[in-house]
Length: 502
Image (tube, rainbow, N blue to C red; front, side, top):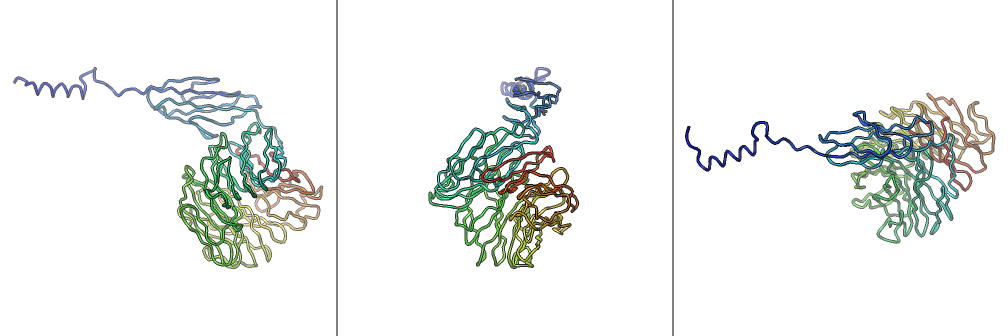
């Protein structure tokens, strides 16, 4: 065997260091990570390896694996899981990758009594949404009292957003939208983590939680904003500046970080990074898609006829496409619709990818038909409209064909009913009087009775009394994860939230 030279020995040594030698070869360094689990309230957290935490615990991991955690409320009926915080959020399933130290907190709370009512003194409620929280929005003029908090309007009317714990029904946070004129919040929705997406109008000097909504202090228009679920702090906002023709139609959350925003505009408006112009002679409908992470605009489209058109509702299909409702005059060429009367209601399904209409369907119940709210189930869409009475029409998600229609006249609310899908059937909320012409299952008891109408397969199968008042309306419905309904009602000068199983 030949002699190894010095360079050869050095190369061999380097090779041994790089590749190791026998059993002493260095292995991949383990990852030392600690998972801290905190339990607040009566309950426990169970890891997928069977370990259980009932207070504050720390678990060591060195393999970088993904760990799943289950929140288990106490067997006591007075406790419910209120959500995660830390490296998990909301009511979603919790799983963390242990490539570094992680911490999660499970919140367990007392169960909200059922039925439950919460008065918002001085509030004119506009919308409600239920997920990890119960969030309600609207406007007030003068003084607003919610729970133990109080707001005073700074100009004319101001807007507000209030969040309640879904299990305890206790006020979590209250956000103020104020300016020198009239401001409001008319539409909202929640994502799976409990963040709120809210939209409304702002006047000169308009501010959301103290942050200006427009650079020009004299500007007015409409806004879309994301509020953090834990505390209501604004995460981002987008505005459209314009005059009185601007109005909010709705806001909804879809797939792939999609936030959809619909409304009404006239002339030319600036979305911040793109102009949109209506047809001459009236207002048109707009629909936009934004990134939920930072509010970045992905696309915006205009839909309209040569007359005045409005957006009045917004929902999302299971496939993630937005569905817009409203009313229009004359013909709407973008979806090949022709009005049968002076004004018809409409439903339009739009592609989530680029805003191109998939289909549109007109609904006419009178010479003038006004569109209302829209809701989506697995393969059906429910639209409420107002004409010579109130009507509900159910259409197919795939093609927009009308399946059935139900209507009632006489003493009804001057606005279309609120709608929702829950417990496997459709629900409509409205105000009826003793002259309302509805099936025999309804027995009026007052001059203006708030009722939930329960529909199944095109038939009215139940009418549930919410209360009666000379001045009362049902403003919005929201199904809850457990199947119950949350109803936002207006009773005189106060807003009232009502929860029940019905």
